[in-house]
Length: 223
Image (tube, rainbow, N blue to C red):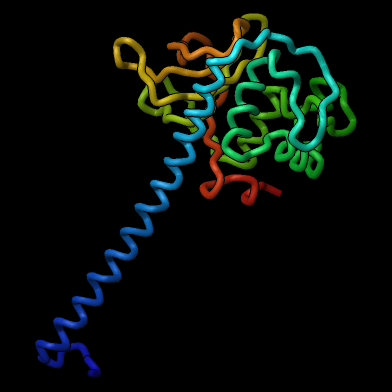
């Protein structure tokens, strides 16, 4: 049956509105599914980060030669960046590979030459340096506002800080809350191994990022 606007045909009008409702429901479900999928990744990442707190890890940032891709320092050692690297790897993303590919293609966008005097990428250490990860997340993920409002920090968000002595630090925001319910707890390693702590605002925040495939990820890398 053909239907035309303003025909006065009630059957046609009913059919048009029925199809409109179906289209609305399809669009709504597609949007909701996208949100659920994104949240699912973020919560998987949080779970992987919290899992890291169950391991005994000696804080050791000595330069080591490791495999590529999928390389890692020995399981019993690590620094703050290794918490992130291992958590992302547990959900299927190899930051060693992701960072290397981006820094190899856009070396001057990274601080490797300025800070460490390097002239080419190094798969052993590039992804284990906070300043490099900050550039990577800004280029390939989402750079978010740095605020003093705890509600702005979602589970799975990445936060960087500057510690005393100009030492950069990094951690993952979780879905667990502080004892007073005002701040999300963070998984990080500040020297005593991976820990889940109420420390979001303990140091000066220098960066706030979100990196999840499908939302941003490496496919949206800047030129």
